Image (cartoon, rainbow, N blue to C red; front, side, top):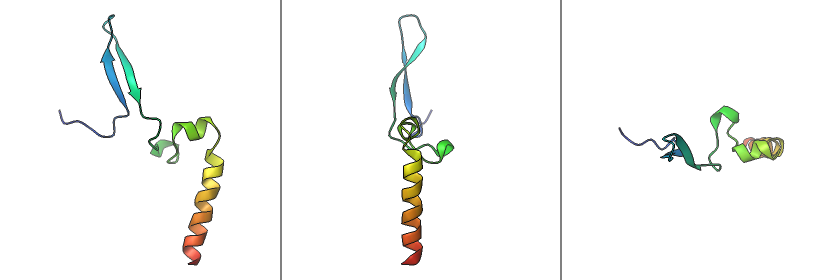
Length: 63
C-alpha cells in the first residue's frame, strides 16, 4: 500500500495488542474545521484568524 501524506497520526502496537497513537500532527490545518488547526479551535484563535483573513482579502481586492 502506498503511504499517504494526509495521515495525521502513526499507529503503534502495544503489549496488549491494541493499536495506540504515537504521533498526531497538531500543526496541519483541517478542511473540516474551516482550515484551522485543532489548537486554533481549542484556544479560541479561530475568530481572530477569520478577521485577519477578511482583512487580507479586502486589502488584496483593493490593490
